[in-house]
Figure 1 (spheres, helix red, strand yellow):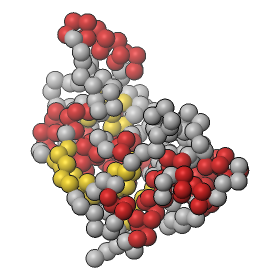
Figure 2 (cartoon, rainbow, N blue to C red):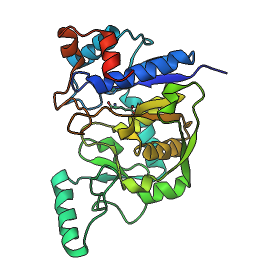
Figure 3 (cartoon, rainbow, N blue to C red):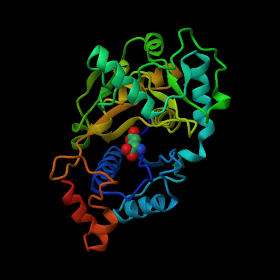
Figure 4 (cartoon, protein in one colour):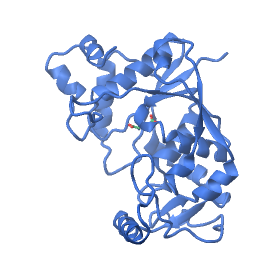
Length: 294
Ligand code: GLU
């Protein structure tokens, strides 16, 4: 049997903090314990928020922690052609439509709907579902708008997509994956419709987190997706895209998150416990392992 392939996939939008350290260490250790491969992927599709200095900082922090990963590192911004090709396949299935709505317009439409119709449904992250302003009544021509992306986003017609894909599920190992080699499995029913018409290609970049993570996990042969529990619900979208694009389904192991004293997930933007700052303050990699509970 070929060895498992695991990856740590940070976005270089800030310095790594203890939450990232937990994810990277869990993934690395799980790969090593199984004689598997450990890959690093830089998820930098957001060209306005990602910085080369943060990418270098990520590699410095991971090396300091004692992790070693395969080279070359896959950087998403080098691979837009792969995501365009996948978007083209979805468009050929008649599942994408252009959307020119701004966030403010969507919020305004939802507020107006709530006044007349009561509470509008939210996605698992609590964001109101896209109200369908730009959704066409007829299936969209397959050659629709990809060439003009940049002027509009492309959304997935979720109703059609979910109907085409049929029933979906994924294999989940949860936290047990990191404790022992033969983790129990749970079959989770995936309900992508809970997310509504998600954006597949953003206006400013020819892909989205959901599309690129799905394409990359397949292209890199990831066998087990190891990541935080905050992305558990998004897995339904990834299973949908994998199915529509004919890509294999990895297994999933969503792990616990580190919380602040105030009960929030650690975040880069809130200036939580950066690894570089802890290193400068004299902490050692062994201290970091202890601090994240390993
Ligand atoms: N790039 C994502 C993040 O930094 C992780 C994506 C994933 O592991 O699927 O939160």
